[in-house]
Image (cartoon, rainbow, N blue to C red; front, side, top):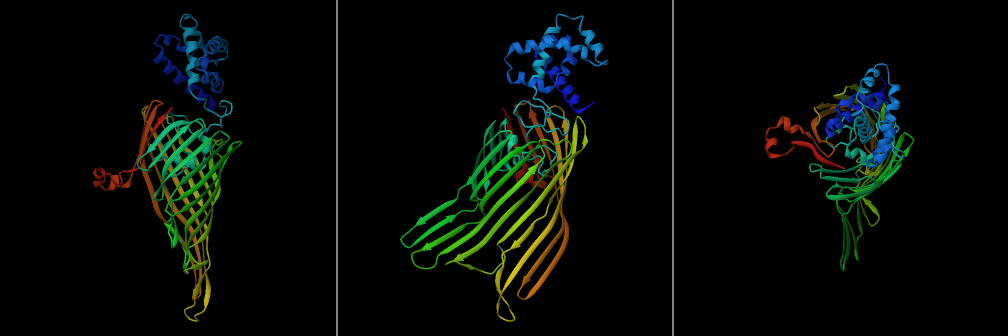
Length: 472
């Protein structure tokens, strides 16, 4: 049985179950279900957009008997059984299309103007946007969490209406279907985010302000607090792909610049200038999910007095990091899924050259430092349905610095370092509870919960993340 027919059967089953709860008198006409199954989900989308249009439902009811002869041989006896019951049959024929239309279309042929739907693992009640407790390993094939959407899949916020709060991460997000906003922490400051999303284009702007300016008779002082952030993200859909361009100017330490009426002018620069471009095949992927891109960072850690840099340490640098992430579902069932993937990065960092004194000759010479690495992070994520309202999930990743090469040149020495280290494994287990389509809460336990019994009582390290949704 192909994937589309599986989805259609699942939708009809859900519609039939809902119809039984809403109209018990329609149960004798359950055998009319195969006729509704043959209608593609995309065709029922217009009815979902106008649930109050009774004439549309009547036209669907009239069309149902015409579709019955097209049933397969296995379905034909069920259709014949429905014929001796002419009284309840019209009731079921009207109810079935309405219930099927209430379920969003599952597949690439959604309503006009919508982005193509992801056709990965079997659809479950939990194929929705998750909190940040889920998919912390960033497996490309698994479901998205709030952070992933805000960082590289903004267009998927189009049409989504929800409220999300995460106390442990000091984050709050609201999406109104088009406009969206968020509040979180950047360094020591609060940061606000606002944006707008459509299926084809989305943008967001974020700012965390920490500016203090003091003027006196003798000196002018301008301070910038750690966490001051000015950022912008643009996301565009190209066919079945999404490209996201982002940039941030972040002050990572407290800056204090002084301009006295008399004396030396001092300027501190403790900031990161970040830019990234990420392309993902998420909207069109079926079995193989990937994202690729490159990130740039200019890290400044320096002090300038009267236009001259002070100090000779190699700290300021420029880095470029190509990245490629891949994920795929490896085990599927109606009650569980397992995903495997690998995230790779090749960071190259070039430090600013600095003047150093040669201890032997006493002369000033330049020093340089360059590092490059290949970082490979395999990951695995599993999810299990526990009844109709509960979902258990667990995930782990393994950080392997497959190769790091360091080249350092100072006036007195030259150093070459090559290393390969695998020294970090992270694992977490969490639970999601969802009440109908109205609300959900999601959390993952921290290591302390399993290794330190005191954390259960003092609240420290109990949760890696804890968040909740209200859906609209």
